[in-house]
Length: 503
Image (cartoon, rainbow, N blue to C red; front, top):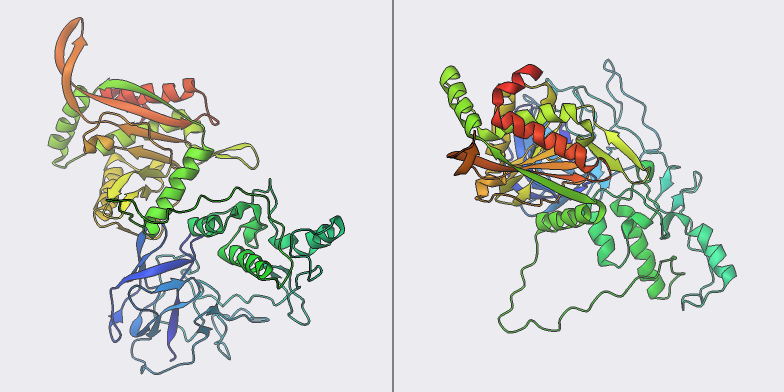
């Protein structure tokens, strides 16, 4: 039986490349289905990828430190019991080959010839004894045929000719690169460069922070391009194509694509000042910086807070621990209160679609947990918390906490959040005007637990207090709604037994 190729899948959120941090296996090792085989660092996190099928490792697709792209061969595996032998690769270093057509292979018939692989799609070979149950993007729980990409599909420059495969070339006179083109030249260029021309006011979707940064470094906004991805998504190829057009125009080899006037970037200091040190950001730090900037720029946030007497919550936790013989943390208990609050106030479990001016109310609750990790601030997500018991929620939060200690998360652990809980009290602070985790609409903050004087029944006594803070997108709700959610959670903390009525 021939070797199977584990193709690097799309890592989600528009991420198409990742750096090899560590291989967890070596050539000659036998691996089982869903066994983690490699650690990869993308622009958002370090993830461990499991293999979707079993076999003996024949070869690895890259060295530690090497950047791999979606669609490239990550690993070659020989089925157990089959002799390891060299087989012809169906992809090259630049990515998957294209095929004019590829009929779907049925379970009862083997493909007559190797089929070119698409990004994230395993090349159909002889059936393996096992298939992965841990679905990666592009890998299913059953064998699937490779999806062929038609030669007549739209390219990054427009539509490719189905006969010749040639791409349209830039239109316009060769001597029009000095910026003094007349109105007729501009009109002629408008149609020829429609697919890769910047347009002010255009808001094409751009998910990848790498794509945004690449465009920004070359002086333009990626969202002003017409993307070639699904629903107009701007992908890296679109930005690189536009940059190539700019470079050719500047070199006098073609007409420059239309580009809005943009302020010149400030020049970098000629030399560092005395005692000054410059520290370049790594891939994840750059992605985080771009994400924070986007959140602050796009979300009109507001913040309200309240001091809460948590004395009864601590007493209830002691009783719960004693009754079950288990340990329940404050974060899990407050998370349970927040879930109940979101059911009462669903507008906080939402996102705002600025392109369509619509509020998107999410049917499920995916709870993000702001976490400080060795690789910086990340927000791992516990999915589907609305259907969890307190014990299940506690265990899921603990699993994410354990993963945060290393900064390595499963591929889906950093995506899909709908609401974030930030227990910054563990850092020793009382409150924070936190930046909302875009595209979510709100974040609940929990301050430190500290003993302070408090008035109870007209008498000053020592109680354990905390501060609750809610930062919210003012487009999705007003202050009254956010305050109602906050006071509900506060009431659950002060009188935990009151939540029994909602269970």
